[in-house]
Structure formats: C-alpha cells, structure tokens
Length: 111
Image 1 (cartoon, rainbow, N blue to C red):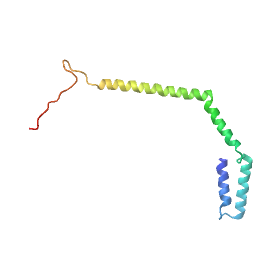
Image 2 (cartoon, rainbow, N blue to C red):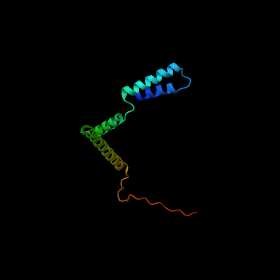
Image 3 (cartoon, helix red, strand yellow):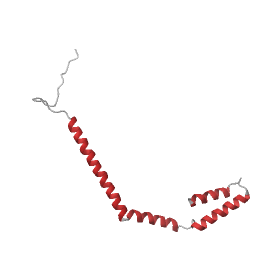
Image 4 (cartoon, rainbow, N blue to C red):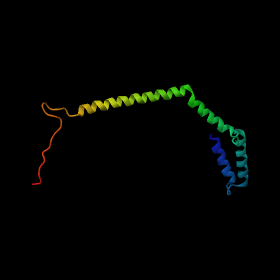
C-alpha cells in the first residue's frame, strides 16, 4: 500500500462536496491517522530516503556490479567491431591479376 497515495485519496474524499458528511469526517480522520502513524508531515523521511539512495550508489558492491557490466558491454562492442571488420574484408573486391582495383569508364560524347 502506498501510504502517501492513500492519504491523498482520503483527503480528496474528505474535501469533495458531494461526499456525505459522515463519510467526509471518516475520510478526514483516516487521513490524519495515516499522517500521524507514518510521520508524513516531517521532512526526516525524505532525508532518510535520499541518504539510502546515496549509500546504495556509493557501496562497493554496487560500483563493482556497474563496472563489470560496463566491461561486459565494452567487450561485446569490441567483438562486434571485429566481426564487422571481417565481413567488410570479405566483401571488399580483390584486385584482378595485372589490373588495378580502380575501374575507368569511357566517356561518350552527346552524339
């Protein structure tokens, strides 16, 4: 359950004009209980979440995982590059005996 979203939904229900008064009171009371129980008004929770993210990103295990994935990607790119070079070498026209690889075309006049 996403507590913040649940609280927002209860607040909308409590503020909606067409909601019966008893339901509005119950929704407002439920929202207040969630806010109090989970400490949604304090900024400490947001700071804790930011600190957790920074701690995870800077942990040695995470850094090692990212580095090994990057090395794997680089290795794959090198293999693809080598394969493309082999294929292009195979497709490159070879020089015929006694002739250069450059073909010359005859020019015809407009006649």
